[in-house]
Amino acid sequence: MRMLVVDDHTMYRRGVRDLLQQHGVDDVDECAAGNDALDLVRRHRYDAVILDLTLPDRDGLDVLKQIRALPAPPPVLIVTMHAEEQFAMRALKAGAAGYVMKGASADTLWRAVQKTLSGGTFVSAQMGERLASGLTLAQRGEPHERLTDREFQVFRALAAGTPSRDIAGLLGLSVKTVNTHRVNILGKLGLRSNAELIRYALERDLV
Image (cartoon, rainbow, N blue to C red):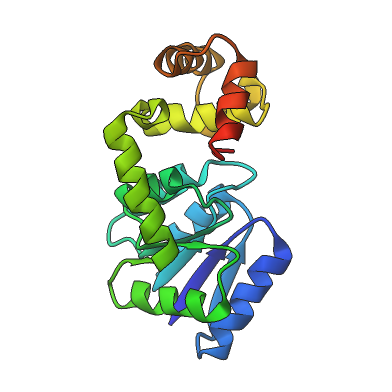
C-alpha cells in the first residue's frame, strides 16, 4: 500500500505519516506543494492521497480536480483547517472521498483513511451537521453560494489580502481575468469594495 500526504506544514505531514505507518502503511510519500503533488500522482500509483486545501503554490481545490481528472485517479481525502461547510460541499462535489478537520483525533483520521481506502465517503458527524445547515443556507440564497468554484477561489484570495498579480500566479490566470472575476464577485455579493469583501468573508468564517 502506498499513500501521498500533501501539506505545507512539515510537522503535520510527519504526524500523519507516523499515524499511517503505525497502522501498517509503510510506503508514505510527502510533499508541500500542489505542483509537486500532481507530478508525484502522475508518476506513481497511490492507493490514496491526503490533501490540504491551502497550499503555497496552487489552490487545493484545483489540485483535487486535476487529480480526479487523471486516468484511474486515487481517492483523495481532504484534511484541512477550514470548518466552513462551503469548503466541504465544494470539495465533495469535486470528487473528494472525504473531508476531515485538522483538529480531529487520530482515531477519526484513521477511520477516514479506512473509509477512503474502501471506496466510501467520509465526513464526521459534526461536519455532517454543518453540511445540512449549509444546504439550508443555500436554499435561503446566501450570496456566496452563487459563486462558481473559480470565483470562490478568487474571493478567498482577495479576502486574504492577496494582490491580483499573486492570485493570477496562484490560479494560473491572467491579471485581467482575476480583475474580471473580482467585478463579478462584488456584483454577486452586493459589495462595493475589497474592504467590504474582507468583512463579508470574516463574518462568515470563509477565510
